[in-house]
Image 1 (cartoon, rainbow, N blue to C red):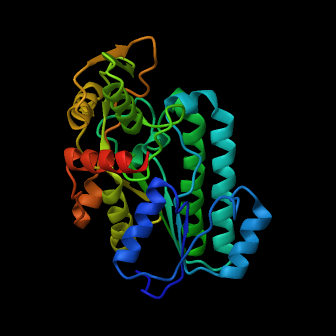
Image 2 (image 1 turned 180 degrees about the vertical axis):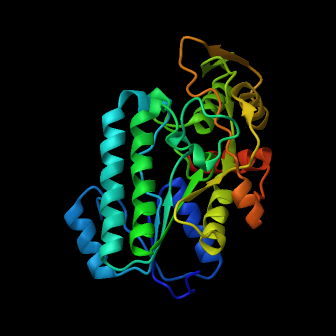
Length: 309
């Protein structure tokens, strides 16, 4: 593991995952952190990224920056999600390598797995079948970044680790209804319906698909744990090992928000992947497990939303 005085670059520090990693690093005594906002450094601009690495010379990189969105945003912007994410990954990973960064953590996504994977999904199921069509562009980009890290490790002996988180939620989540993921979208809809006394809240799909959810503070903890304990050229799954139906998740959020109206499941809208429960055996056997229950994480997230919306 890197030292407390190591110069650490967190790409995407303003995002949900990046900000959680920064909070945990500071809590554990890592104070030599560097980051740039999107307005200060566009990670899709190769020349600027290379200049940044040349000047700053970080020792460690957390690549948490990405173009992300929910099912609606992914379906309608496949090329954008593919090309922007490949650009970010190539620029950061290659600039890190060319500037002698030995330790890099790549944040992936469970959407990289085939849409009809055997459950729970093991790391070796990657590239064994077709991807979920609704987020294929994003998934392909994440696979490219993951494989780039793996090949650099095999060819040059770097320590570029990939972690594949399940569905994340938490502090600093995106609550924009046009681009948000499951939890913040439902939470915002229910809060606004509660405030406006609306009798009904629409949930996309049948409510029958399953989703595994992980609180972002647990994700940050797992990321540092993997840096300290995982040894390998590829990647490791991060999750809880448990899932619930979207209907069950919606009802849990409804209880936390305190909304007493009806949930309307719009079956004209897509469900997305039916199930993607991760097999977290590898990380579990190394000694890691999540600290927060779903209810605890959702309560903290809702309190943050109320204070920051």
